[in-house]
Image (cartoon, rainbow, N blue to C red; front, side, top):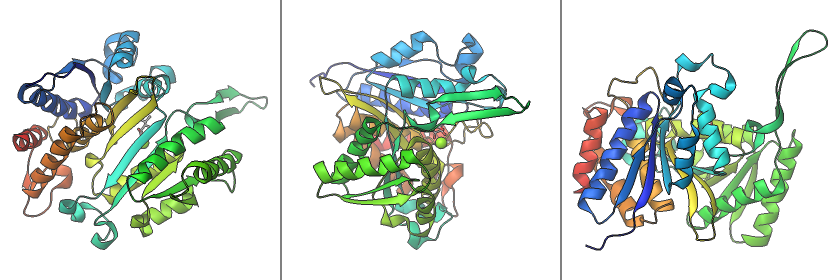
Length: 368
Ligand code: IPM
Ligand code: MG
């Protein structure tokens, strides 16, 4: 077989169940390395609370530079109650935010797909969610997460004031909207843009810029504007009306958690965070499950590794140009679900409960 060039992948398992689920991704990468002509160079390091425990820093410069030099970063999860009282700059979450911001990963793709095998795992009625396939595109490096001024200050009357700033520039809006329109082209050709233009100037600008991009470059895509609160409601009322949703950092955080529950379990949802193409056509990227570190179930071997494994499938597709391998991996996940194997979060009557690593092994057995 012909060997393709070595691709660097950095695994950052992080905290809690992040470590367990990324271990399964590692097995899958190793399988691709051993069985196919692919030759991934795997590196692994500490991030989040795990890095804080060792270095008193949630992400060291060394790890940050490794991320900068990798073709794809696969992150597990960060955070846990143990770190709740740390000052902001030391918290595990800062590592994640630093990676997103400094790698300029402005477009966060969060698909919410309801697998036919798991229609009953959703708390919504089957007819509302079966066949659901939404792509949420969340802006990831701007808005209130990063706006200045920010902070907590003592004010004259002795009270304290907490401040965060929600702001967007035209370019920040246009580049993420373009990602959403491009995705819609290959899907249902429909974009819903969400903001709060009824109360926020940044929302008015968002709406205007998204509309003008559509008018200039994406005439054949249907565009609807929706207030974010209405969108939250519509996601529960009739989620299948959506194809691609594009929204800001904070609304995207909230709406994507909501959408995840339509699919039955947070344990199934992958995500991709993408930057701009460089002059060689490569993009910087990071892939992570939408779920968090889930300290309550960490270390028990019951976490669902599918979100992480599907995140790696997204890496194959979006960063490594390996669509065929991505298809194979996604199909393997489907087959395992077809056979009735379930981790605890998605177990239902008549299905067979398996552990995190058994689920990983079963998926690998389908790759063969
Ligand atoms: C997410 C998470 C993060 C966010 C946290 C862990 C900082 O909720 O990726 O959705 O708020 O963006
Ligand atoms: Mg979130």
